[in-house]
Image 1 (cartoon, helix red, strand yellow):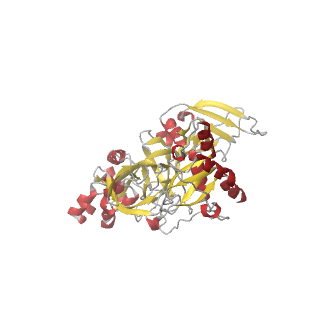
Image 2: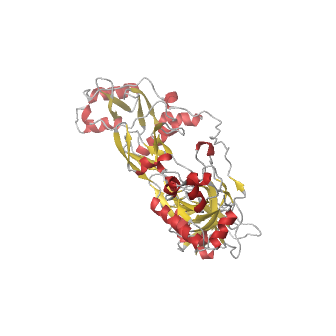
Image 3: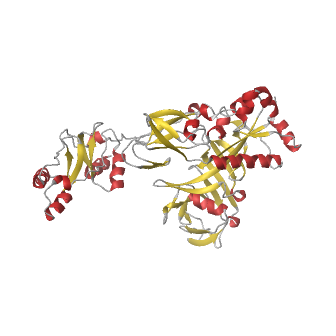
Length: 495
């Protein structure tokens, strides 16, 4: 029905008709043919944490010159394996002095906001680059080039996250409360760019987009582009010097690391009725899997299939219980992006581009190829576990520790269910204080593990909670084994 050239002429002549993605469903439902004929552009938008983001920076040569081999910006290390004074700062690289509180995403935000950045660089020195160290301060105006280049942004849709374990988990999907007490989800649903062009008919290599408050481009498919399963993504670039910290914001994800909130808006040209139909998608049509992040494997079990409409409602029913949902993306700012994009087009400052090549639709997502088997807890744990009962005497338990040469004993009830744990240090303190009851000194909140977990996962758990052993329990909380830090270190050294 239409071409991009025709739509650009309408922009130039002030005749273009633009609607937001959340307005299109009603227009299309009333009269599909008329909506396709009269609407020229549907604006889409998303604003959320996009970890696979970063910027290429060129600092210019110092005098005498230096070939930077190590570089820090506000104590965040940047990659310098490019050329003498080129570097790439990644959004998730964390500060060497502030940890999770500050990272590459914050450096990018500070640059865009015009704030001064501290640069520190080192080199081994060469005949043509004799300098071995430099320290200075700069702003984005001092750079020759500052190019936002994000390998994976604006994923088509996202799985939601829940946690079935007894402990709080800190993940890239935010903080997940224990025992399925919250659900976190990302993405903006019916207004998200790739959701409105799921067949990539108008979004491809060379598509002009709104990126971080300025004009940018799609330069290819994103990393981990998985179109067969509805998880397509795009690789984007733009001039960081033209961007705004309103639409680029450094972020700290508690207990996980740093990231960059990126604002992206893509205009979808309505070339025919099929494209119009795709932009009329509603939140209740977009399905999302809620995955259990309490299972520390890449392939996580699906707890429930829901729609974005259910997620945005604030509550989702799981096994008869209403669980609170929380968005990790901002619909409010995404709508602001759509409106800003509309203004730029109406002001004749933004014209559409025809992709020079479509995004691939047949790629398959691969997992990492490993050369060695990853050990499970079951392969290493001690299966014949010495246990005690709450009413046992402290003297009896101390004798068990000495007799078997162990440092801890799980405590079980009459039905052999785990109710606590006692260590040799607990016994020592109890004897010094003349305490006689075991149930008064045992730790009741026990860090447990399962026999089908990876050894690396349990090692991380022991480190996180600063304990040196964990009982292995089954689904009924029966003790089936125990594993210590020494067991794990021995197994990992063999690997």
